[in-house]
Length: 219
Image 1 (cartoon, rainbow, N blue to C red):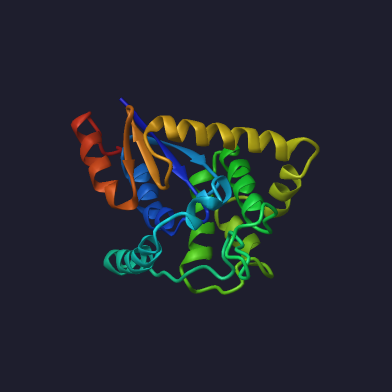
Image 2: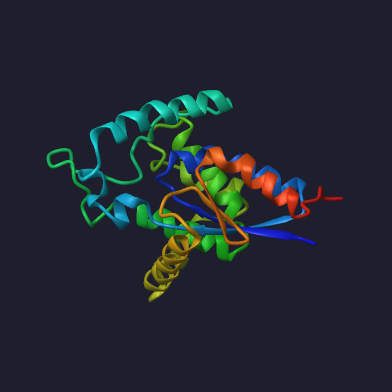
């Protein structure tokens, strides 16, 4: 019996990036379906979140994300440019964003073409592995999209077609509502049979639980 889980994932989340290759490998090697649910990051959904958080939240996060990447042997550097723009003068997140809406809608378009996991793996790597500064410039996005088996020009045309931005954002909003119903607001969030597993460091527990439920290796 094929098992399945929902994956709530954001292009602005380095923790989402850190878990993606393990999920891709799991799906390739085991009889399991990953239902990708791309969402907008907290900075877009709740821009006041960071302004109201304790300063220790970010200082620990900055330490932990680098340590987690090093522990996993995954190359990492903070994205340049950041997928979510912060006004440096006010340290707030404007409603008008130059990158994240396009990225998230592209992720939806890729998912609708059954290439969602491959797309987020390639684009996540491009943004977060520290080997490409200016990931949004030149042919970087097009080349990464091609590696996922898709054409960036076709996807871009699809997401700006009349009514498509609104349609895709409605679906994304639905994902975000389902995410909270699943048990958490953060990413990456994996939900298996109603049980939430929040964070890249819960991946092993997700696999452990699925093995209890009969997870098998693909033949």
